[in-house]
Amino acid sequence: MQQESIGRKRQNESQGRPKCCCRKKKEIETLLANYREEIEARQLRVLLIDECHLMWGDLNGYVWGTSDEEIAVPVVNEREKQTYYGAVDYVGGELLLKAYDK
Image (cartoon, rainbow, N blue to C red; front, side, top):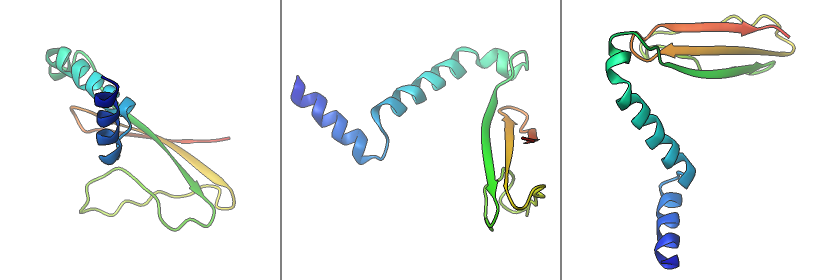
């Protein structure tokens, strides 16, 4: 029994995913499947949320958008750090973006 557990752990590690991430992914898939009708009828909204920190001196960053379009995000305080919070609507694809002021 212990040998099987070790083998599964090594398999997950070799795929670059810790065991807990696989469980979380399955949990999310189950939730989306259970609420599929409500999500598609837009009675329930699912948002994919993330944050981004732009630091003074950074030339590159990550932003949401289609890969064939250039997206510019102005940095308000160039000498410090600017934090942005963003969310993408799972069904509609709408982007919500908000700069966080200290």
